[in-house]
Length: 193
Image 1 (cartoon, rainbow, N blue to C red):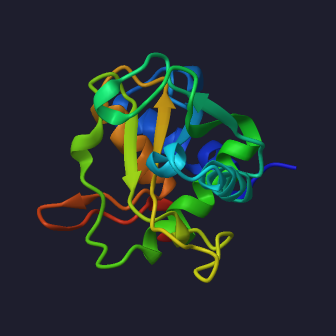
Image 2 (cartoon, rainbow, N blue to C red):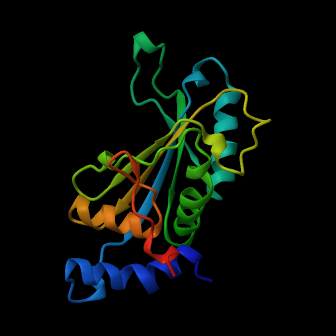
Image 3 (cartoon, one colour):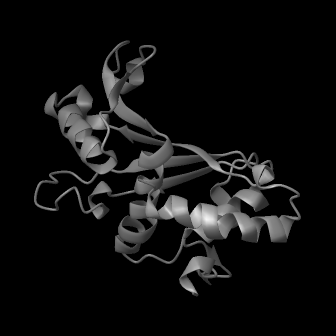
């Protein structure tokens, strides 16, 4: 069964993008390829349970089992040895990706304290967007009572867009609340109807 956000993409976003950027075929419209979620656990050097907690939280948030990332080389100033666990990551594709983005745009981001909109300056010049979330307990799956230490995560949305302008329009139409001129950006088009 198709997720709600995928239906919005296929039924409303594709025609709007074709009209705005003068694409000749729907296959030219940029799409989201994958979403990568990374959690760095700095306390994993001293607390062996910290990586397990981060892994459990990430699996609850994404619905997929994360893999543990390990240090590639030793760094004496950080008390880091080669092969030590330093975080975990998940790569989402297809339906799980759309389900996660739907929850991110509509549940998690509005729960961020003193939220003023997302800065559009986080694009990398090739149509990919990276968002840092300081407190992963904004996701409803992670309870506030279970959080002992506030730790964040980073979400990278990889698109097929050639330019940042196309990727920004795609994410805006899907519901990403960008800020423009110090205030919330334009509302996503599917909410007007």
